[in-house]
Image (cartoon, rainbow over all chains, first blue to last red):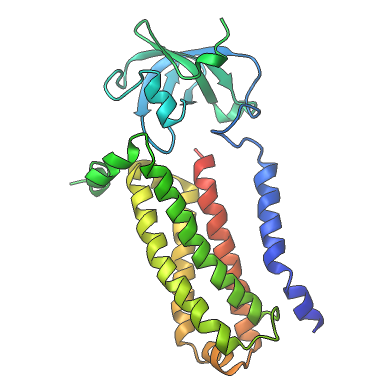
Length: 131
Length: 157
């Protein structure tokens, strides 16, 4: 009976452990901005890969001296609204990204507010752009 | 021919990538399905571990098992559609690979238990031995792990 009464709590305990681990890892990407630096910075590079669509549009870019970065764009609707749609860019194009870098530098992850390709600005979060 | 590319280019994958309600609805359908897989399994496992012991397990088990089985079909179907959106991306995602492995293991364990004499004795005859309890713990661990890994897919790169 002693054992049984302890076994009862295994499910909830495992779930709690899972939630704790989830919170401990911190950088829950995509949503909000708290996981990223407050400062808006620029990052330039060459596009390696473009993904436009659900669940989340993103770019992979090769920078000159900071390696390969993942750039999170807006949600699918916001990204479409910015004008960044299929066909406006392709791997190999140069891109300048304005956005917020993840607080965890090892992630090499930036959430973009604007990307600029060939002189054209695509404003993903127009309200957040600091100029 | 690259099967992942064929899937990626399929009409439903193209449709699901577009902004709109299709993807969020599919996502919600997947969550509902997996809730109806994991929920009934968890209730049955907890019953085997001594929770709700005033309820006859022979009464609880059949509807729980049937619900989980039907929901598993829908969870796999909706999961396949979600996968079709970025197949080449997901097959490189360690959380996805671990999740698929856990789901396969969970289903294999459930199917094996359905044939095992000690399990049937527990479910039908209310003779819950140490083996059945151990399998209940294993089952809980597998399914909780599968949910965690599933949620993790969005957060590893």
